[in-house]
Length: 393
Image (cartoon, rainbow, N blue to C red; front, side):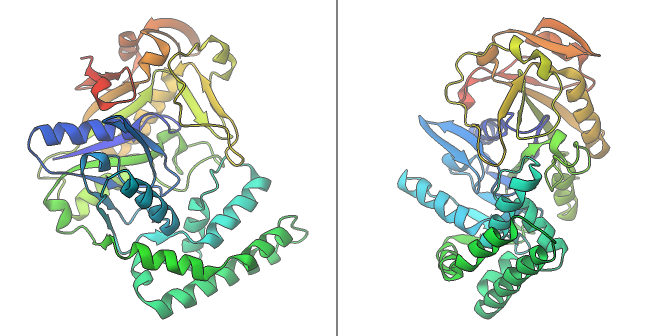
């Protein structure tokens, strides 16, 4: 069995919460779940509150606190530094995460992150500055570094040197670049030996696996990163992420492993009871932001930062949700669709929302009549724990 968790907006919808909930449903049935990350990288931030321990997952799946292993697919990037830091934090909390990584996952280096941070100050595309986009671009430019390369010392050393030269040449060709001196100065100061030491440490606890057997022995929860409105094909360029945030990759993974016919996957779309966007770029209904009155949101994970900018909030746009569902239907047509509405404890049961340009006040349950898919199940979350999720319909 497999379930695919998809953000229906600009990210930050509650995918970690939903993933944890679905893992728990499998565990209660005596099954063996595994979380599969199928897009993005360490720039994800999925908050899970389990047994009064709260953790933001970026490099491990959101079922980790329940002992559920994670498979990092070939459609993702990994950050060795991020993996080590998060592993140590989990280990200190008494959690022993199990991480499997596809050998063809791209690896983010300190050079990628330095470039991302400096170029973002000029472009202001809304990047979180973790190096995901620059890693993808470097891979497309053939300066590739895969997880499998980390296990060959000479290969790793030479590829890291080539990547350093790649960025130096890339920026030196930009006439009059205001970021060139600062970036090159930072690159030259990077002690790549520190990075290599990090790689040596994570090799003790990561497992390199292509998933050909692994994914056939577990019930799968595919955990998406970001949201459909940030998709590189369907979002509002240039303020998009460099990945497919729809169900496209998850369904490709099932097809590759010949798993899609065993039990058809179910899609779980996630939306808050209001609209958010972290970073620059278009978001509808900003003129109605003053109508959004929130409560119980003191533990919000998202805050304004140097690279993404402000965390914006406003009332729900049901037309934007329908657009997101339409985009995903290009890949998931005919599959069972479910909806999870989170953060209802923050808005209350009555919310403002727009439909066809008109502003209305309605109950949470009433928004379903304006949404295009016919949902099999609809859940509502009135808190930040999986125990706060209840079936609405």
